[in-house]
Image 1 (cartoon, rainbow, N blue to C red):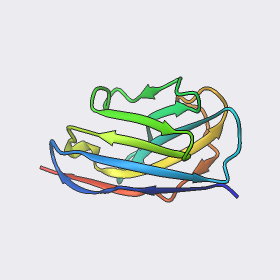
Image 2 (image 1 turned 90 degrees about the vertical axis):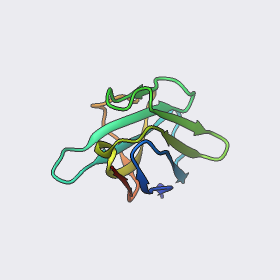
Image 3 (image 1 turned 180 degrees about the vertical axis):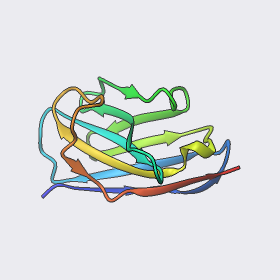
Length: 123
């Protein structure tokens, strides 16, 4: 059974940083992609960043380019999202997701999802 468990969310002031982690259990597909998505109240879910198992096909949403960095520790099966220079508009529930395949960028469908962690950025 595949399980994705996020951690690292919280509250921070604008300009601050947070690092999200996502531990993957039972995910044995090769090749595979993992990604971060977010959804703010009243808004559609947005693909934030993605990366494949080989460390390639990295994508970022335009709104986070230059501020967020996605990385994947293949040995530990942990996905990270380093978020710097946070803005109030980054406030959302952040979800980790995984899919089989090489290509990670939206609108490709992700099959497995975590429960999400809240990120709140205050001014």
